[in-house]
Image (cartoon, rainbow, N blue to C red; front, side, top):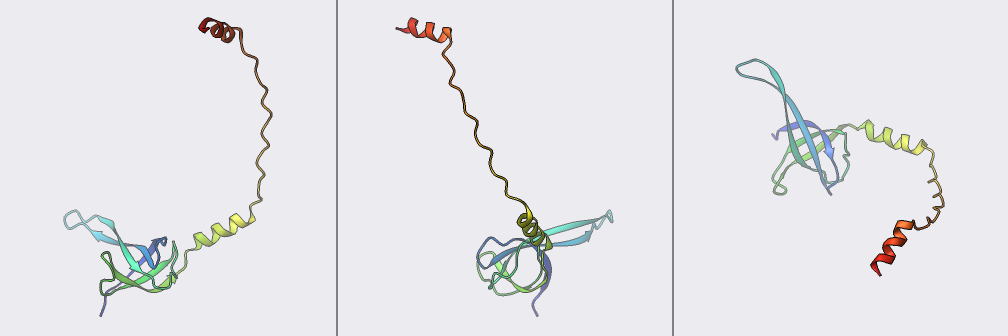
Length: 120
């Protein structure tokens, strides 16, 4: 039976590959303090179904590439942050860029004219 892990998708930019972060809590053997250990996995997603922020279950499989030996089993929860962001941007009014102001041409100063005469 293959191992199964649960993690959160941090990147879905690549084609048929997602990056999943799995966090686990570990107790220090001497001091007894609990701390979090995180590890990133490259996971094969055949249908490009998972997106950033989704909570997914992945299972171990034969090596698919140099870095991929896990495949997506199922999506447990969808990331709500991406959906909320899309809704918010749809409601925002589009602002028009301000028109540029006309720039007045400045007259050359006396010093600039003096320098021009001196160089001749």
